[in-house]
Image: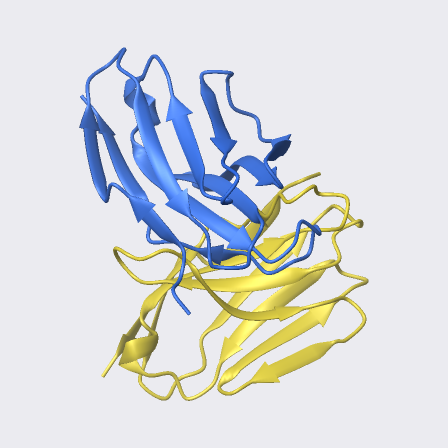
Length: 113
Length: 114
């Protein structure tokens, strides 16, 4: 029940394409859903986050869509660039998780020029 | 503002030895978190320290332990190292100890157990 399932494992798109990464969760207590971006040799960096009281959030070229009834959320990257090539992790937590972020397995995104 | 720093960058140990990893949080942050990122296993929550106290630990054996110092820096100790402990160990910090505070990650310490 604590898992967050992320798909796909890897994704290849052309520059300008719109990669979509999906995550699903079971624990209905989760109420904060951040996405992290990780480049090789670096720690994960917060990209964007959403709470379940909104269905969509945009920050620049990054958009999170949230479907509370389906317990699913997804990341869309508009006008993708080669510099977006990285591993993306979704995560979930709640006030009762006591500091624990539960991460998805990660998606390796490659954007070809 | 300086980010989370971790040392050493790389650490090589042999089975049965002990490893000590260090983390300095962002200035003003009181909470420190440790995660293990092993190949193929994603990021697994290890420990959470806030105001010098251990607040939560993940599903890891007791040979994984740590502490938080009065200046909020933290240390992760792994005793009786096993081959499967080889992983990237990430430290994160947050401003407060609320469950949904944003966690900012450091670059990690790569531990290799031979």
